[in-house]
Length: 137
Image (cartoon, rainbow, N blue to C red; front, side):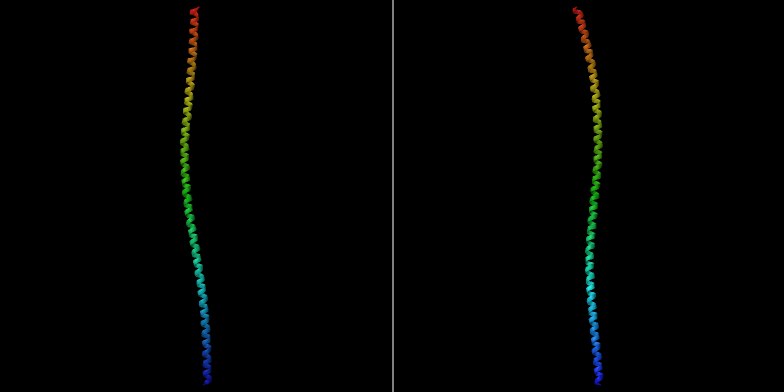
């Protein structure tokens, strides 16, 4: 009977040691899984931060592109305005050239007329002097 009790105690002790060993293995596995979970959560947080940074850069790039697009549009509008102004200035310049040409033509006509009158006056003076010379003679 003692021998049976000893065998039962030995068997119970062995079972207890096995249970403790299994519990220790389970606890270690739980610890390992907890560390893995924390590591995954840390990586996820880091990935979220990186994703947010990329989104912010994308937004900044989008805004910058919009700003550049607006600037380009303003430059195009200014170029169109300058072209219109150049067109107006060209028209004014052409009118000025025509006015100068007309004025030069009028001056030339007046000069010819003055030269003609000068010749007529000289001719009349010469005739008058000839008549005076005839009268004095």
